[in-house]
Image (cartoon, rainbow over all chains, first blue to last red; front, top):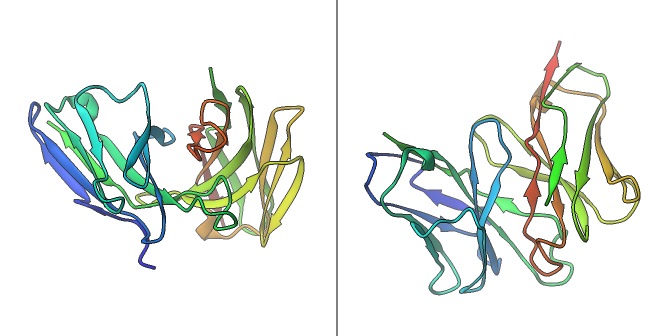
Length: 118
Length: 114
């Protein structure tokens, strides 16, 4: 068990460029979440997958954001035409929905991908 | 809508006990979680309460009162390494019982001093 892995860890880009982040969840976990965190705030939910199906999207997630989990394993989060307000830490988390696998309120987070938009 | 309130900062002395409170307003509440996050690190799960009462895990305990929409995290025998941000988070009707999505508070920055 190597934990949740995210890359790149840091990304600096110019406004208007597209960026993509990758998340590799814990291998046996069927649920995968994307959160965004800014300085001094708690993580804010963006979207979540169960296996390859995207089941929920936050109203925070504008049309410029898209996420995929094509084979129910790793996931990508793409931000198109980045804006300065997109600067944040993008956190990925995973969990196992099987009965007894973990606490209902337990998510396993990666260390995040920090985006800076200039 | 949903809202969670917790103190923004708490300072405590090494070896002491500290309590971090969390009050919430939400619909269809399912449970309250607590997470720890060190600067630059990932949030890590500490505890989850779905029912009223106290859950104890080593030096950490968490309490929930559903009728008061209130919970707290209790840290005993504080150590310097406990300096971190602590977040409460709810599973609620917005999340859905099958969602496991959490809504986080803004966090409490705990500073442990010698």
